[in-house]
Length: 297
Image 1 (tube, rainbow, N blue to C red):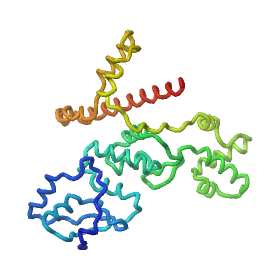
Image 2: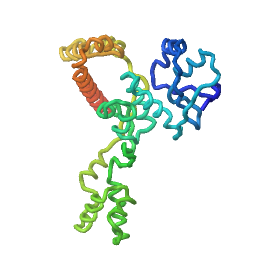
Image 3: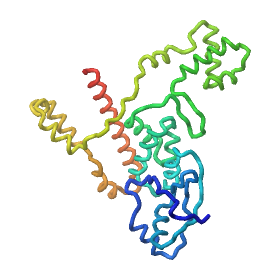
Image 4: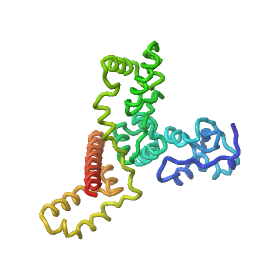
């Protein structure tokens, strides 16, 4: 369908660097016909094809071929990421994951991984860094699963008492748990036990909200000078060891770019696994320090 360019809204690009002007110019100067631009019909936002749209403008076109897609407004960015997965850098994908963790916290790690092209394990690491949690997770199959089934067990127990003739499946569907869970609840009630096992009750008592991320995090090159001037670190052996360790392991944003280009193709997966492992270790260290800081306060 041919659509006037003026009615189209710019994409919420998943690329951190936005459009490549060089690529736009190369498209505009080529004789090739440009594929249809994918547009979200309810909002007229470009989902895929901003480079093609800008190339068409440079060619002096007033209208472009458009292919419409539907869906909720909050999923426009998801559609854009999915449509551009093959051309997104790792940094682009990680930024997209962080955004989806905030806008769709109920999505499972695997569901977000499928939409962004990042490994589910990496999504889990970023979820801990972003902070916040949802009471349920929506998997790739669209099914809603509670993170803690204690509430579902209690509801199932109440329904079993009120409707002893109801089937396992009917109770499971209404309580949002599996038939196997309902069977276990029924067994526990028959034995005079609480429908929620002690380990689940203990988890409820100790469960705390994941701390929200800091609005701004200083880069290592700004933090290290502050630590080096701290007398409690400078004037004792353990403090100096901490400083040496931090200096040896500090990596600022972009420091790794020169390393990536030198990694042989057959080693990339191993180096990527090592990077993720280091990221997890740093996150665990950060969480422990923050817990100890809160406990001391």
